Length: 503
Image (cartoon, rainbow, N blue to C red; front, side):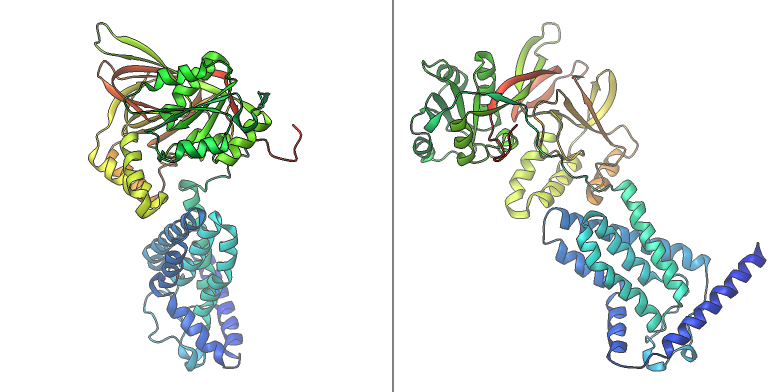
């Protein structure tokens, strides 16, 4: 084995000297200064940190690509400098091998094998490319230029650069295993159904909750201007929201029910619409407008178009059966769920994120909110479908949400018959440190603390102790157990059809 290594080492060394001789024969010029500056800019990863800082200014995939690149670079640097430079000691090229004016000064004193600059460069470019292929392709020539500059300036032998580049690319691919790239969201799909045409809102009764997230004094007037023939009623803080919604739905001549308000208001209107078998028009009146966004009625223009043309689809409705009150004589109540429900620290996390979002932007606000929430919070002991867990968050979505990680955002299909269950657990040792580390590195989705699955029914039991439950943004205290089921395609809702498609 030793003789084989010595022979291969001699063969590699001979090839290195052959290539360096040809590089040394290249005429001098401005390119020498360019490669010297390029090589120096990548010292201690400064070049890639600067590129990442620029990319971080652009939210979404570009920011995630920057983070992925930095993580890959850190892994490559640690492996290269901490492991292989110790295992593979090698002398660097001497001034006799290249023109003196090209030599980097001062020349590094660590082992020549492998090239740390090359490893970092290829790791960063590959890591970025795994998330944003176009950016990775744009960075590839720069990374290759840095790798070549190490030979051109006499800092490394060619084989050092090749091995270091391979280590860097490999480190990026390894990080993808535990920090997977988000797959693309599926295209929206609808089960279309006939619904009454409501030109200018004729036959539509609209309920406006003045406590809704985006209500203003001029809201009702704006709605009357758009839906000039609709009946519009406003619910004041002292009024009974559910009673007023039911009265609007029962009003003579009402063909469809419209609602302006937050998730809780939309939920109450959906329950009334399902009970009366009339369509629901959800207007963008909440803070986040979860259902309106998924339904495609995120603006008044889109909502008016769908209602005027009678374009509607079917959605599942979640049924939430909860037990609360005294253990010996619990009270049972059944609620409607259009969007999501949660137990644990999720409501606190959302409130913190929304508070920080205007100043920090949603991605960074989410990270800061998670740190603050989980640093101070404590997990709950819950039995989920008969399995005991210590849980930071138990989240149930009505329908499959995407992305398929801890931060659900959109729901392309509204009638898939599924409940989306997501648990972030504290069952593992060093639970809080694991959680905070996964938040810091953006690996919550792939961490062992995160459990994702789909089910037609979910039951959560607090073992006799009361827990706080949130259903579509409405908080309920003193809940002892809760069961979720799906009522398939129970709700007809207005949704604009893509124009030019006959379905």
